[in-house]
Image (cartoon, rainbow, N blue to C red; front, side, top):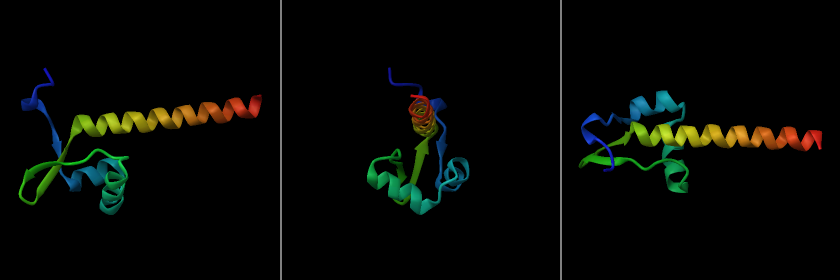
Length: 78
């Protein structure tokens, strides 16, 4: 089973920008580049993002930053 959609939290753009600290245009630019989760359609002109998708995106960003830092430290000691 994919998950319990009843307990899924959906974030709208206003909440999303304050949580991820990116501007609306930056978010849409990253969506276009494939580096940010796409929104889900909630209505004709209404979109939102699943909290779980954003949490996975944030975790992958943290992981990439940590890996990059380790590589730089290793390069400076090698």
